[in-house]
Length: 249
Image 1 (cartoon, one colour):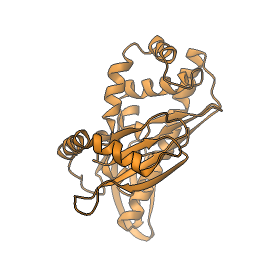
Image 2: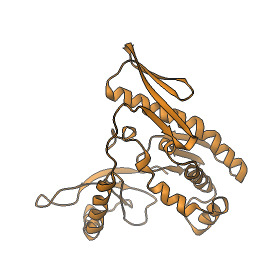
Image 3: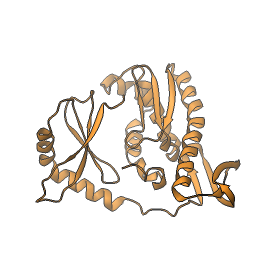
Image 4: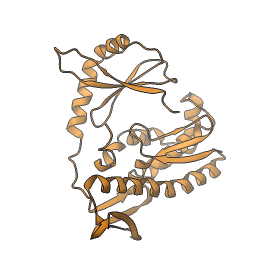
């Protein structure tokens, strides 16, 4: 489900090393939770009407854990790859696309020049090229994930309203109360077994809009190894090239 709002909160005063913490207000939240992402960014999810002092006290109690996780994330963060990439591997679909700078004049454009080949024509600034590559990944992921989701829905007797694919920073997928399944385009960089699990996970939400024991039993019916796959997906951000998200804080 969509988040209601977000804000920035500085946890420590000027006498300490100030850190920006993203505070996200969620109608679904029943308690305060904190998450450290693979980039080292910290997000606190809070119920509506939670005071800033309550958030500060919560983070003060968990400061040691948060800092240890941030340090580990910084150590494990892969080095930035050269840009533009020479190739793009979409593990979910078993595809490897070579990227060719075709040169030429005029406005920069990118197109698939045949199976497994992307050509970049014209004059590009680096940011424009990033935007075009991101847009291509989103569109290509939607084309591949749509039929896959529909096939799994038929096999399992699930019904969903519609599907959308977006570039999301914090979620791999979600399912709304109206049956709209939103998927992260970065699933294209994950192993097929992991993607299949995520699709089944969201389809299971069309019957159980929670993570109750009944929900997980349903998931296990279709994917007995869901716990292993869920852990792998949790670390899946490391398999996403940095140009997919280096415009997002």
